[in-house]
Image (cartoon, rainbow, N blue to C red; front, side):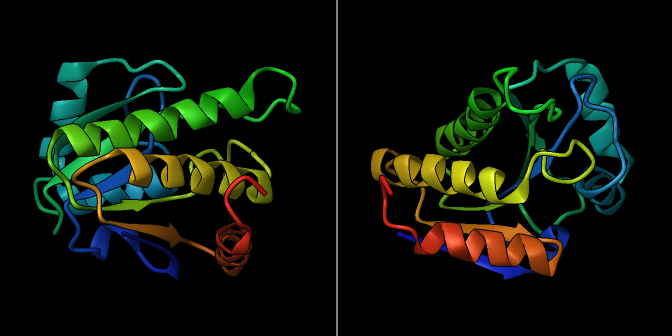
Length: 171
């Protein structure tokens, strides 16, 4: 089992599933969501429209269409409101559900972006710590999951994930 952070375009990774940050209405939004939708082709937006809704703190899964992965998991993270509105629990829930869906679809490799850390404003160090903690728990519990790549978009994201990965579990 492995976890690593890379400065990479998530849409280029040949993994079983990529996770994208999504809105509750599952329509493309600026950032990773838009890039994933553009790379996957119009069928992805059609699949999302058929699903229609996913609550914050959860995720849904679709085919990946023209992407090199098999699946796209659409995880709805919270918008940062200062930390007192349950944002950490919602973000952990989005990652937990995304990894559960990957496991349920027998995915061995998954790429995760920094959900909620871009326009939604979640502080990157906290977002990375939550992502790494939830992923460690999933790797220990899930039979299929073998490889997780934290696909970082900026050097700051990469640094935050590298720091979170270097922190011992429970630390």
